[in-house]
Length: 378
Image (cartoon, rainbow, N blue to C red; front, top):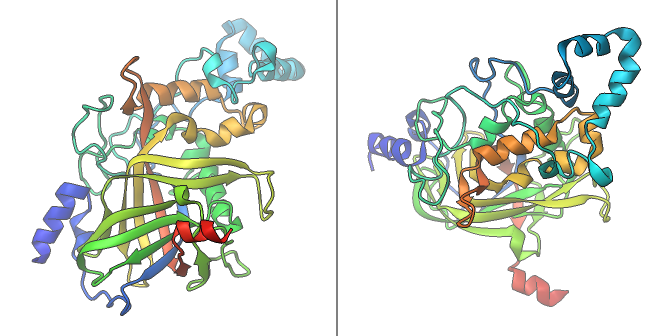
């Protein structure tokens, strides 16, 4: 296929900028057609548009509490001698009946939605391909490269949160934290490609996207080392087999339900202290571009349950509210309002939200034993 036809196909069907699709001298794949990778970055795709948050970042729980007070009382509480009283009152705003807290039980608190992104540009993929029949209608974004139809309601809901948005082209604490979890082995993710005949164009590639129990191999500066060995988990739920293809140097997969393990707060220990959740992405697909150095960069998109998006805050409980300052009820209200996938036929409420994760991966040796064999060995 000629390069201009490849570029047009990518741009229309998968929102891939044509410049990415016009690849030149990519190396030949290994003779056995197998290529392994370990993820070095997997975090919400950040785009800091100037028009995104005209009213400022999402208000903290303290700021939201103050807005419930009459102007005169607000001014009184803000006076230095009354700081202790204000702290007691706004932190108390995080709790409800029977000791419930606003981050562990956000649905029990009636708060208006937090500020959301108003800009028209965001990173992401066209997940619904223009059809909202199975979801809840919404206005799609345009990608930074100018492609229309981007579905990323997660960013619309969370893109004005300080710890997500970050500053000066750098993502916030959510990006730093998730990177650290990859380094510590709590979220280790790997790819194994089989049947690869060309890195430029190959119509049929099998993609195994999975977790590994192995910790990342890093140097003294916490930089991932290439060509380290990793073994895919025995748990078949976290071993996703996807149908893929390579078009113009871009690896793409067909929509599928992808599940990957998350563990929060476990560090380097292999015990039960970590809180275990999942990346649970329905209608998910990968779009990763081969780089000259052999790495992959791109996006993973899909529809996540709204609870999963705020998993870190929810697990943090009262600390997320009173230390980080999250108004989790306002966060939950925004996610629920903007959810656009998995419509409940009884209520009409969508239970999942479109999302985009920015991803990078470097070459690695990925060992895979079919799950049935692993179970038999236990």
